[in-house]
Structure formats: C-alpha cells, structure tokens
Image 1 (cartoon, rainbow, N blue to C red):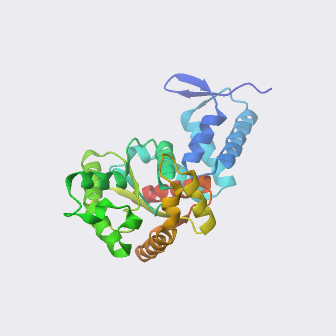
Image 2 (image 1 turned 135 degrees about the vertical axis):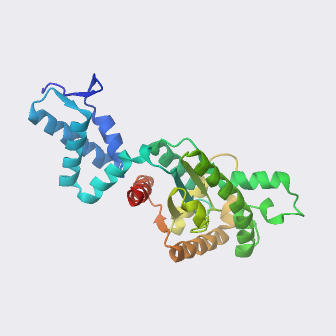
Image 3 (image 1 turned 180 degrees about the vertical axis):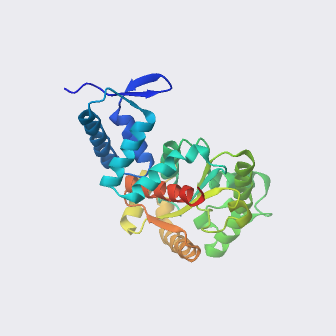
Amino acid sequence: MSPETIVVHKGHGLPYSKGLMAQSLQASGLAPERSFELAREIERRLALRGDRQVGVDGLDELCIEVLRAEEGESAVRRYKGWRRLDRLDRPLVVLIGGTTGVGKSTLATMLAARLGIRRVIATDVIRQVLRAFFTHEAMPSVHHSAFEAGGLEGYGEQADYVATGIEAIVERAANEGDPIVVEGVHVVPGALDPSLRARCVVAEALLVVDDEELHRGHFSHRPGTRPADRYLGAFEEIRGLQEHLAERARAARVEVIDNENADATLARLMGLVLDAVDAVT
C-alpha cells in the first residue's frame, strides 16, 4: 500500500481524502460517480509522484490538470468558478421556478447545501404572509394555490402580488451581500427587475417534468398531509401552467431543465451557477 499523501495548509496537514475531493468536484457540477472516479485518479497521481506532502495550491493544480485531461476546459472553468464563489463582490441569487410537483423544493435545498447557502426562500411563504394581511375580498387570488387561482389570468395576478415580496428579499440580499436561493411557482422566468439583477450574480432556471406519468407519480410522494387527489384532480391545470411558464422561459432565454433525475438536474443547476459566476469574474 502506498503511503498517504499529507495535504498541508498554513502549517497544518491532513491525509488526502477522496471523499472531500469528490465533494469539491461535485460542487463544480460533476455527477457523484464521476467525481469519485476523478478523486481516485488524483490519488493515483499523487502516489506516482511519491511526494509525502503536497500544499493546497499544488493539489489544486493537480486537480485542474486531471479535470482538463478527463473533462475538458469547460469543467476546469466551472471548478475555478466554484473556487471563486466566496470571493464575489456581489451576492449570488439563484431563482428556481416551476409548477407544482416538479421537485423545486428538493432541488433548491440540495443546491443550497452544495453551495453553502443558508437562506432558501419558498415563494409560497410570501403568499401565506399576504393571506394573513389581506382578506379574501381585498386580494382573492392569494387565497388559492397557483393552479386554483382562476386559470392563467388568476395565476398572473397572484404572481404579480408575490413578485413584490420576491424583489424585497432579493434587494435585502443585495444590500447585505448574502447569497440566497428563491424557489417557487411564482418565480416567473425573466421577471426580476434589471436594476436588481445588476446588483447580484443571478442564476435562473425553470424546472419541468415533461413525462406526464412521472409528473403524476410525484404527487403520490409529496410530504406532509396534503392529499394527492387534490393535485391529481387539477392535473390538467398544473400541466397547462407548466407549459405557460416554459413559454415564458424560452422567451426570456431562461434555462428549462427537465427534472427526470435529481442528480443530473442538480449538476445542471450547479453548471448554471458556475457559468453565472464565470460571466462576472
């Protein structure tokens, strides 16, 4: 067995860890299995060198060398972008839209964890606040779920009300310099005010589930006490809203991601984030 290589940083050293390296590679947009393969290749090259110690910078250079050889310049650019995330002069704001049952909340939580972002805001929370302050007579659309608000017109009215809250949250993130993920059906593709976009690094995507049966199946596994029958009974409305949002996304040149597989979708979201970082650094 080859002796362990010690990674040294600021005078302290720890053995090279394939697990930690794989996490770093996943954070740059690679799939888990591929990340571990490359982490193992880095370990192999360290062993071939015969060095008992390597500095953090030296390990970083080796990682980039392996990425360039195995995945190409795009992967190298994204890895470097991930390394720059904590040195941005503007906060990262990730916007994830999509209709009911496409996996927005799950993917937003997974992405935030991978990016080290602590604040994940669901737009339904904003709608609940509006419901608490405005009666049904004063603001009827917010007292219904998006797919029950009265067709596309009712949804549009509800989304306009919630947009005020979304912009307030993004403005606070810009003022405080804190990264944030905002997810929900009210994240209308391309709708964020350009003046706010200019103060943040914005990555935006719309999640869809193209396969109708897969989409139906998601409602049988929703957490909490919400009955699947309620969603399945309004399935055509939900699908119609999805198509409307997809059209908005294409018109606004916002990425539309078919969420067939959570790992693949997460990798694409990471890629969007890192491309957004690369565009401003």
